Amino acid sequence: MPKDAADIRAKIDGTLADSPQIKGLVEQALASAQGDLKAAQAHIEAWYDNAMDRVSSWYKRRSQFILFFIGSAALSSSTSTPSPSPAP
Image (cartoon, rainbow, N blue to C red; front, side, top):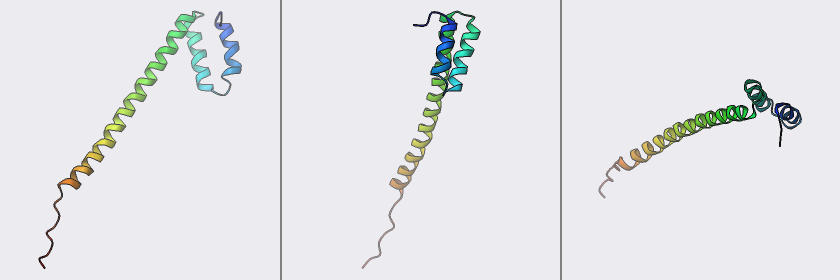
């Protein structure tokens, strides 16, 4: 378990080398928290919650859009009347 911000910085240099965006987020959280690990954790949690809210909103809008067109297609195909067949 990391003891302080310096310990976390040392660990993220090797662990998050392939993820510069996440590494930057953790470094920014540590810098803004000024050594307070609870504040850094709260910063990261807030970022995660905001990101998940955006993803959820996007998914909801996208699903509603797709379902609207599926419903429209189903409605238009069920309400169309077949043309009368010619009498023999």
